[in-house]
Image 1 (cartoon, helix red, strand yellow):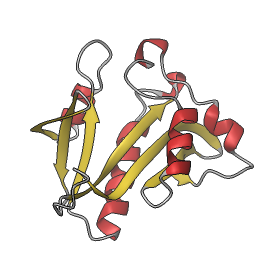
Image 2 (cartoon, helix red, strand yellow):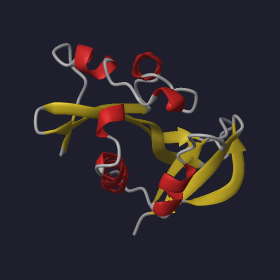
Image 3 (spheres, helix red, strand yellow):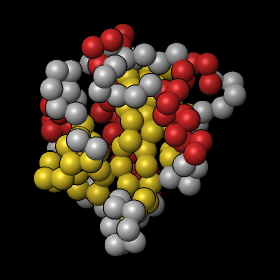
Length: 151
């Protein structure tokens, strides 16, 4: 498994990543994510998830943002989006993606990885809790905020 930057050569493969239809309400599309990456170039870190040459998913991290946007100094990094193709789910690609985001945050000197998730049907909550994330008690746009301490 590996990550790859989004390029003109793999853009069509990136936007072809589709989660299970019942998950579409809990994660934005790759197209929306890439549009957000375009307007947040200093913050967004979009990558394809590959198994050999085969695209199996997409992730986008956020790096070193002012979480509250108020200059309070609460700078955070974490996983913004995780889209694993429907046919590739349950094979460790999501875990790999989280580990790679953690490695990038560590490389930049960070010690915590944040993520948010919807609760309810098709929620990724159990996935994140199983990886060791713990709820912070905060909500962001109605989503649970979770944190993973990086050792």
